[in-house]
Every structure is written in C-alpha cells, then in structure tokens.
Image 1 (cartoon, rainbow, N blue to C red):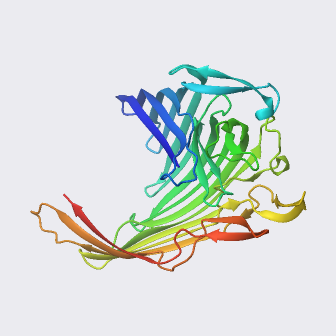
Image 2 (cartoon, one colour):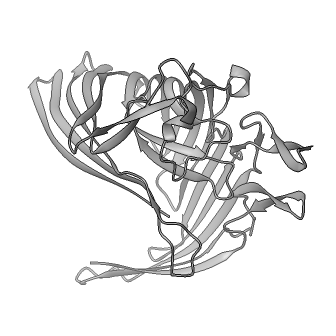
Image 3 (tube, rainbow, N blue to C red):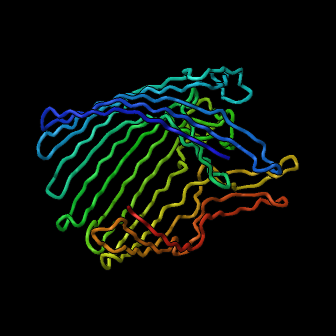
Amino acid sequence: MAFGINQYHGRADFNYAPNNDHLFNFGVSSINYKMQPGTLTPKGNQSLVIPDKLNPEQARETAIYFGDKININTRLSVQAGIRYTLYQYLGAQTVYNYIDGLPRDESTRTDSTVYGAGKTIKTYHGPEIRLSLRYIVSDNGSFKWSYNTLRQYIHLLSNTTAISPTDVWKLSDPYLKPQSGDQFSMGYYQNFSSNTIETSVEVYYKRIKNFADYKSGASIVMNHSIETSLINTKGKAWGAEFMIRKPTGKLNGWISYTYSRIQLKMDDSLAGQQINKGEYYPANFDKPHAVNAIANYKFSHRYSVSLNAQYSTGRPITLPIAVFNLGGSQRVYYSERNQFRIPDYFRMDFALNIEGNHKVKKATHNSWSVGLYNMTGRKNVYSIYFVEENGVINGYKLSVIGTIIPYVTFNIKF
C-alpha cells in the first residue's frame, strides 16, 4: 500500500519601510497539490492482494496578502495583516451525486459527473486575519497577545481502531469543506540572572469548524467513495504551556509542560448517525498532559553528554465493551467514540558526544555520538486491537519499539 502527495510552490514577497514606525509586507503565492490517495499492489505472483488504485486528486490554492508592523512607541508594537485565499478542486475526476437532503450512502447515490483534466469542480475562498500585540514590560520581560483565523484545504484523516492506526490525506472537494477556525493566545516572557534563564507562560483557545472525522465503523483506506464515510464536526481546543530554558553554560537545556485539549462535536445533518449522542468527544490526538526535558552537560570542548525525556498522556481510543450473539454469530458492542486511552507514553534517551579536534585549517569536522534510545526499555503501546480467535475475541497491545536500542553515529561536516 502506498500514498503520495506533492506540492509545488511559487511565491513573491515584498517589503516596504516608509519610516522607522512602519514595515509593510505584501505578496502573492500559489500552491498546486497533486495527491495519490492510495494504491494497493501485490508483492509477487503468490500474493492474495487484489490490485487497487484510487483516482489521483489535484487542486490549486492561490493567495494574496498584506501586512504592517507598527511601532507605536518604544514599548508597544502591533502587527496586523490579511490574507485572502482562493482554492480550486480540479479534474480529472469522477464525482458521485446524491439525493439532496439525505445522508450520503450507496442507497442515495443517483449518478456521477465526469470532469476533464484541469476543469474546476469546486471553488472555496475566504479571508485569513492576523493581529498580534507585543508590549515590553521591562528590560527582561514582555507580554504578547494574538488573534488569527485560518482556512485549511488539506485534511488528515485518522482511524485509531485499526491494528496500525492509519492516516490518510484528503483534499477539500464538493463534499469535504475546508477546515476553518480562529485562535486567541497570550503569553508572558521573563528572563532572569542576566538573561541566562528564560521562562515563558502561554495560553490559547481555538474554535474549529468543518473538522473532518469518520462515521462509526467506516473504513477510510482505499475507499473509492470516501465522502460516504466522513462527517463534518465543529471543535474547540484550549491549553497552556510553561517553559524554563537555560541556553548557556556547561549545564544547559530546557523543560516544558503543556496542558492541551481538543474536543469535537458532530455538526453534520447529512451524516445519518450521531457520534457520542451529539455531545463533545476527544479528538484522536487529544493528549492533555505532555512533559519534555533536555539536559546537556559539557565536560570539555570535545566531550559532552545529553539526556532527553518525554512523557505524554496516551491518545484516545474506542474499545469494544460487550459481546453478544445475533443470528448465530458473535457481535461486538463498542464504547462511545474515544472514551478510553492507550497507556501513557514515556521515553528517555542518553547520548555521549565526542567532537573531533578543533584545528583552524581542516577540510572536514568529525564527531561521534554513542547512546541509548529508550534507555528504560519501556514498551510504549502504539495501538490496542482485538482479534476473534476460535470464537473468542482477544485484545492485544502493539508496541513498535519495546526495548533498549544502542546506537553509534559518525558525522562529517564539510
């Protein structure tokens, strides 16, 4: 199985500073998307895989923007801008048509429309607004506030109930609307001890429209009419991040803690079903707690050690919670969408770094890194899945890397 996406960019950016208090920036850009949603190819003549290929997709996104950075006084500065985007979903493509006002499925499909290469199938457009403010409180402290809107025309679809959680990229089309949203954020930044210690606190809140999710029991891989398996949702995301950083000295590094939530709510009258009874539920990548820490210690100009630690809450997952017999066969009853979570993630890595000599006249600079990946040997769970075996449904945990991995790296810089 293979997926592919190519993006071809072209842009022109300009700056103009009429005085010390204004810096104008403006320009145009264009992105051509070419996507292969999926191909299935057997490996060898004995393979049981049936060849399959989804129709490739292509689209064009064109934008024009204008912004201004304004220095109001020595302490206060403002940046404001607007970007207007035009998105065109293009042929060649075959688009299925459905009865208006009814859920999209095979029973409501009426016919199809064939569009030639380069033909515009669907157009979306709209503005994106950006506004930010920075206020210098003191020589070592500043406050920042921002508001921005966003329109996203490429979607990442994730199904977490498979043995190997699958991600599929999809372009906005006549049925899958662009994702949009607006975000508010603010933060305070303070340095201590002659700027050798940096600290920051940031909070944010985001509203989301047209976030693409999938119907219960849907398959999003190699689906020739994926619009029948998707639903539009609205969402909300909020969180806070705290960071302490020491950028200099023999001992340097940083530690951060992030609390973040993202929840979705079904907002699609044509879905034909409800998700979580129409209430908010955690998105697939909702991980409330995350801690990251990096510490480096330099013994000399040639020898140093590094320690990296990561922790995060396990991602949400939908699990079977009951089994019943119907018509002589065993059926599974699933929980509400993303009601449970896989175990939390934790990993720690260690490295010994050895630099080459620091002669002034040398053609290359060499260095070594010797270390341990996942030095605690923790079996972090990648997914939880269930298989029927001899009439009994058994659950399994899949860990991709469940042991200590030593490594040696040799680097050459010219």
